[in-house]
Image 1 (cartoon, one colour):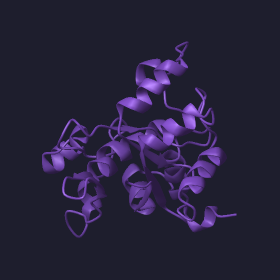
Image 2: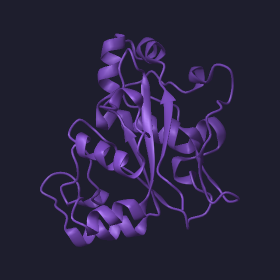
Image 3: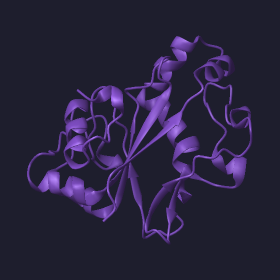
Length: 205
């Protein structure tokens, strides 16, 4: 059975700041905001997760397209922070898996934590139920969780947890994962329980 995996991707803070016309500190603050960091995951990171049919698992394509990839990735506009993959290489984030059988669900870990409702059940006065959460957990074989809480000037890295749904279903069925989700500490406890030592070294206590 495929275990939980951890992949990481370095983010060039200075190049982001220069392109966006802001300070490095402001760039880090933007990259830690869920609504802004999502563009990075969608346009840059998620297309690098590729389903490997031979090994029956996802692999993370870490090699860049050229020696200075960020020159072609960043877009200095208020509405578009990155050049979408479709414009760079004829790809889209929706094609991170070649076979629809292997769908993935992406939800960020923020300072507030993480939960797993459907997109249509998020925001405003919308709400979800335990039945809907379980439906989500059953519908997606894999979950990709970008951790946006750890990126900093000293550690300019996004961490990506690739989690087979059976782990989340077990937590949910045993009432350790609830509709409200987890705070960051509880999420890290979950990861450490199933794969001891997987967490980044600075998170080990």
